[in-house]
Image (cartoon, rainbow, N blue to C red; front, side):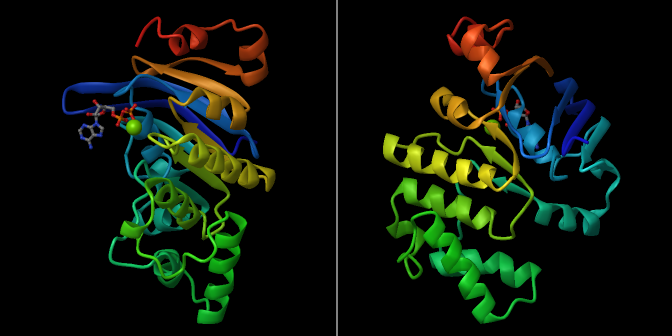
Length: 243
Ligand SMILES: Nc1ncnc2c1ncn2[C@@H]1O[C@H](COP(=O)(O)OP(=O)(O)O)[C@@H](O)[C@H]1O
Ligand SMILES: [Mg+2]
């Protein structure tokens, strides 16, 4: 069974139709790259997968359950299982790196300080962020902020991770570090959707690519097929032949 299954998803804001009929599946452990022009509605799709956007019609199945029918309490539970890595990193400026990571654990678990400390230090070490516990976000580079933001998103050990342009604006070094973080998590069997314009990263981490155009998924193709024998519009999109 697919871990994520989006069926006939439609969404308008006032009279602006963003999605007409979006359909795709992501299998357990798979990474789907979601491509599309700015304003195509990629973030709307990701937000709908954690119940932040309610579809006008259609179904959003996470591990077989239609979350469009969930109430707020059930959505809080789903957000432990499905993590959204925000475009900007979304750290709290007034909290240290340690407290940024602890915040979620304090909110959602009854872990002791020792258990939290162990979890946080393990995550920081795994991602090459050790020694930054007491640093405030403003004193980190933009790249480090994004990496800490990613670490914070996965502190609850979610099964599904939604990456919203995690490498946008990053230098090659930090881009590479983010790719490694995503590959590490993928190596643990996490399922993911990766929204990006950064094709080298998409090709490095994704199994399949999908293209969102005019409120529909115009095609889904495996990365292997895309690289050897592209058949659909993804290549034209990437090579800038349309927006
Ligand atoms: N909460 C909202 N209210 C009104 N319009 C919205 C809202 N969220 C997104 N939109 C609109 O939906 C369209 C798609 O947005 P978005 O998903 O952010 O695009 P992308 O991430 O592909 O660049 C945009 O035109 C945006 O203005
Ligand atoms: Mg977006």
